Length: 602
Figure 1 (cartoon, helix red, strand yellow):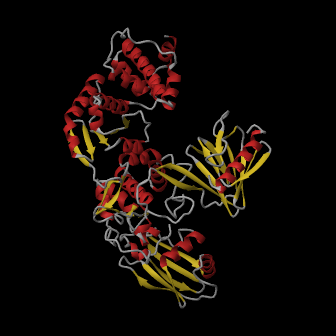
Figure 2 (spheres, rainbow, N blue to C red; figure 1 turned 180 degrees about the vertical axis):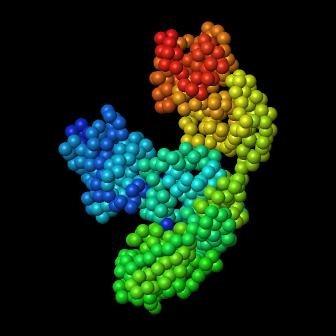
Figure 3 (cartoon, one colour; figure 1 turned 180 degrees about the horizontal axis):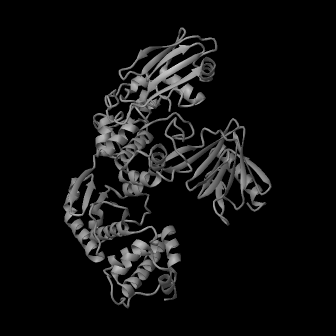
């Protein structure tokens, strides 16, 4: 242990003792230098929290009544468990924690488990690890989360009402690529939560979250590749009818053939997106001075160079030349992004006022969200959308660079990176047929079965616990390697179970309880349909309501197994007493209260 580490341990112990007594979007650097990119894909990302607020103090509290916050100040330090709200404040480069009337200072606080943070009038419950440090009196808060969780949050934050399934899938691949392949210039975390990197609303976007989740899951692990190399990817709101080459916006960037300037008829299909605004000389002077671009006293503003897309590349302020993108960023951050939303503009001076007229919104490089949404509305796939905006680049597996291949069979589409998986199609067909036979259910649209090349990639993509062999959500099924399941004699039983999940969810209404959905799948997986209950089944000791909670919050394989067995017993009771047709009707409408009471009394 180094001397510094020893000091941290002593400081952490001192703080623990005290508290225990009281019971307690600019130029991307990777566009300039490819060497700055991470060499290997990551499973987690460190994301800066509330990076624009520059908070000096936050309140830390348990996320639930009777709960506790678990934290420590270094890896070797005593773990603290706080049951009451506490205050964390930046004091120079130290973090001060005040709880239960006592105060201690340290270099870092690490929070594990669920906790609530409150600052600048916003309260946020976080379920991922959080680290808090301080720099010059400002708190730096960093959340460590799985890559797929990050992608889902950004897609929900950055997407709009015009987006649909395929445009969201394309956006998810671009967001994931940007997060994995970029070096974003932050010392304390990988990405910030503002538009400097990619916007992330920590409070969520309820209307967009289900669709964002589905798109993220459907593209899990996919990023953009170009001729066998990991690619760079950017997106913007509206290209105005013509995308920009990367070097047009960031003149020091290397030219990239898949990020060139191209016309976009999809973006203008529903209008050109023209805009007009104005700003006073005083407003522009203040904005430019704040960003070190101009001193007071300048008189004229003219465009001296345009790129192939028509966007301004360089501007002249009297005798000084500045980047048009730097000008846009300075005006946007100081006066609002609607003043000069893109660099595709004309400017005219009228006395002390400058009038701007232009088109588009954002830098214009890469994926145009407006055009992408229009393409999806016309029936274009995510693959076609990416081909439009990243010429020659393709979505492929982040680990290997291989493209996903699709094989269509009756009732399902198999997606795989390994063509040898087609040898298992016969077993998958059998599993699909047995699922329909046992449940009496079918679906017009095929289900998607995506099989991952390793257990690690499966878990990383689905965020499923280690004991799960496959995972189903809606019409999408993800599995561990088919060869692994086949070697363990689990392939048909596992896929039959997942097809049953997909069929049941296809029929489920909003009032159907979780225990009924899971219980029917378990009962039918075991071969039970209806009629007298097998004598080998024993009544569970937990009620249907308790089963719901146990299914949703199982912390181990044994807890999950107990909850699923109980759900299967209750579902089998319904099938035995009321028949499959009635139970399926309740699956769509909800189980009557009287039936639930009878089950509870058994």
